[in-house]
Structure formats: structure tokens, C-alpha cells
Amino acid sequence: MARRKVIQYEGQSGGHRNPIPTCVTLGDLILPSVIGGQGTADPRKGIEQAFTNMQKIIEGAGGSLDGIGKITIYLKNFEHREIVNEFWVKMFPDENDRPARHVMAADLAGNTVIQMDVIASK
Image 1 (cartoon, rainbow, N blue to C red):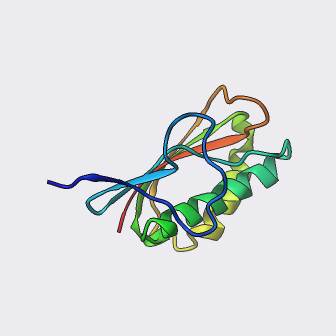
Image 2: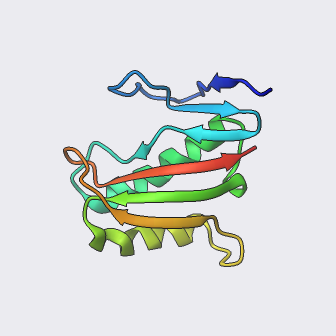
């Protein structure tokens, strides 16, 4: 039976304010904790940072963008979905080869404009 493994990767910054790992693997599954774009009140920069963080975490766990199966995106302001779509198409340009996705409005803390919940495999 597969056992959970906490992932540490090169270039990983700080940790969470809560006692949780940034990412774990379970067999071939890559299961990051929620991924955000913190540190800026600028929605565009925060969303771009979240997509960058997602790629670093997935690759740091031994996966690739091609292994992402589903992403749930939580937005402080649902109107920022158009910004998400811009970075989505940039990261996943082939309309016939994109992960499943769900976007919803959420009450996010502080200046966090986006959080993403990702399911991927190696």
C-alpha cells in the first residue's frame, strides 16, 4: 500500500502558517495543500503568482503540468475569473489537453485573491 510522503523541493520558500506540508505524494498522486498567490493586493500579480507556484510545486514533486487532472480555483472576487482565464490559456494552450476546472467565489483571508486545489499524478 502506498504511503504518504512529504515533498520538499529546490527553491521552496517558507512554509505555511498552519502545521501542514506544502505538498505530499501518495503513490503516483501529487496532492498539494491549497496553492495561493499571496503578498500582493494586485489581483493580476496574485493570480500569476499562484499559477507559478502551482507549476513549481507540481514539478518539485516529480510531476509535470501534463499530469494535472483537476484544479478547483477559489477567487476572492469572482470578476477576476477573466484574469484566471488569461493565465489558464497561457499555461494550458491546447484546448484539447487541459485539466478539468471549477471556479468559485470564496471568502479568502487578507490580501489573498486566489487559492487553488490541485490533483495531479506523476
